[in-house]
Length: 191
Image (cartoon, rainbow, N blue to C red; front, top):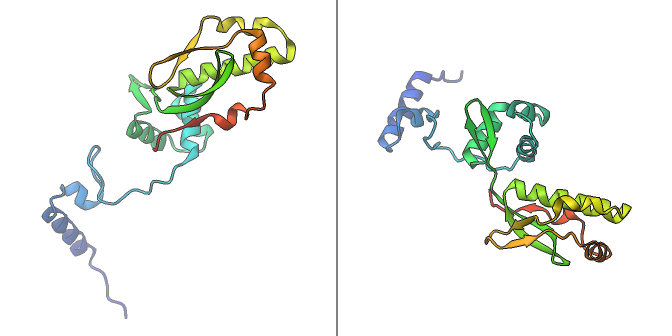
């Protein structure tokens, strides 16, 4: 007959052993308080659903709606955002502060350049510019380029790159055999 476990004694041994190793009581129990490191290493399997939910939040969805639409719990998403510093809580609303570097192709000064930029807003502006340039090339309607007159993006080193609005340069760039925008865009952090 198998020996019956004494859970109370096992629990007490775990706490005593943890306190002897210099851990707090909550860490020794296996349930660290917020801000205390866990004694067990966390599995660092990246979950693309969390990044997709953050992207939805950048586009205007609330944390709860973004979590629900990408099938993750709101608690897990909020913990991920606060641990990685990708959003902060202002009042009762999560405000994205995603400043991870991204490599992205930019049409500037008559050519395509791959720049490393910081933040979602600049990446979004470049994406809008690519879309408008593509529409211009298909329709030859110069009105697609007018919102980008005088606008620029900054790379990770702070250098300014004006967004291309010259119709001839855009037609020349479009005729080149560069990889599509979605093959270049990449978040480059190691998180």
